[in-house]
Structures are given as structure tokens and as C-alpha cells.
Image (cartoon, rainbow, N blue to C red; front, side, top):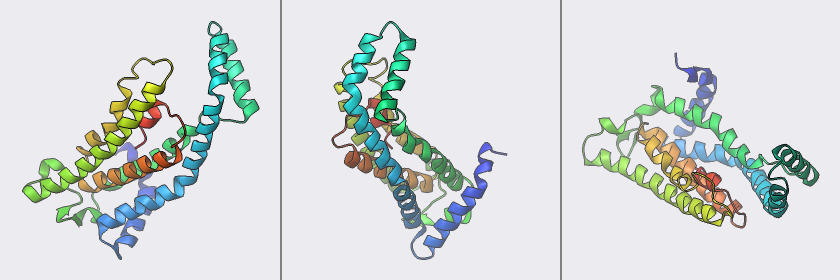
Length: 231
């Protein structure tokens, strides 16, 4: 039994929701619409995270001063940083919340699209939603996979550029910072392992994340890791 079997009750709810929408729209469109609906429901968390990022950007000079003052006293630095965040009523972890909340949703959708069910028998431009790329044959099926991968690569490139700008803006480079922007293309590699339905979900949620962060963080400096993992 898969460890993801614990998600099956939530998977059943997601299946029912997508199936209900699929009575009105093609199943591929239902997957897109359901994903957008969930991301829209999570949007308030993203807005809260953006406010946290803005607050931390304002505090950046004070944080830098504390780092310089207590560079040789890490215990004192931790205490001073905690006191600063407490006084300013800013959480150092607010920016991580939307990403953490998405993990269960991603896991549910992954389980839904990698476990045989009636939704995967439907098609996207004639290609079964349950088909993996090794099983594809004919120009038409490869073209559909190619479009999905190209879309994911385009979103990854947008995040890559954003992560590169964030890395260049860092006052002191961190070890491995040069590799972080390339994490933006991780969804493309993952899509190679999953069926059409999951790749379609990945493209939808990644595009939403990129657009959402571009809007909410348009005037907020971001860390390279956050920018790279926006999808």
C-alpha cells in the first residue's frame, strides 16, 4: 500500500469535485477550473505572505545591523532577531505558508492522477489523460506532451529570470545561490514522470503561482529560493 493512501478520503472529494465540473465541461477543462478554484481559495494566504515579505523588507537594514553587531555571538543574535520580529509583529516564516499549504493539495492531486480512475479515461486533444509520455505514439500525442512541457518550461523561465534577479540583488552571495534559479525548471522534469492529467495540473498551478507572485511581489525584494520555487 502506498504511503499516499492516507490521502484517499481527500482524493475522493477532489475526484467528486472534478467529476461534477466534468458534467458541464471537458474533463481537461474541469481539472484546470478545479485547480484555479483551489488556488483562488488559497489566495488570501498568499496576500498575507506578501505583506509579511514587505514587512521583512522594511526590517532588512535592522536585521543587517544585528548580524554585524552579533556576528561572533550566534546565541545573542538569535535572541535579538526574535525580539526584533516580536516588537515589529512580523513572522519570519509568513512567506513559507502558502507553499506549505500547497503541499497537501499537490499530494492529493498527484494521487488522483496517478491512481487508475474514470477521469483518466477522458482525453485532451484526443490524448488520454492517464497516458505517460513513454506510451505515446504518433505525432499528435507527442505534440500534446510537447505543448505541456513547453508551457512548463516557459513558466520555469519566468521564475528563473526572477530568481536570477533576486540572487544578483543579494548583498552577500550564499553558497549554492548560483544553482537555486535552476530549481525553477523542476516542474518540467517532474512532468516527464506523470500522466497528461498531472502535467496539466502542474502547468495550471505553476502559471497561477508565477502570475500571483509577479503581482503581489512586484515591489518586494525576494530571496532566490522563494523566487525559484514559486511554481
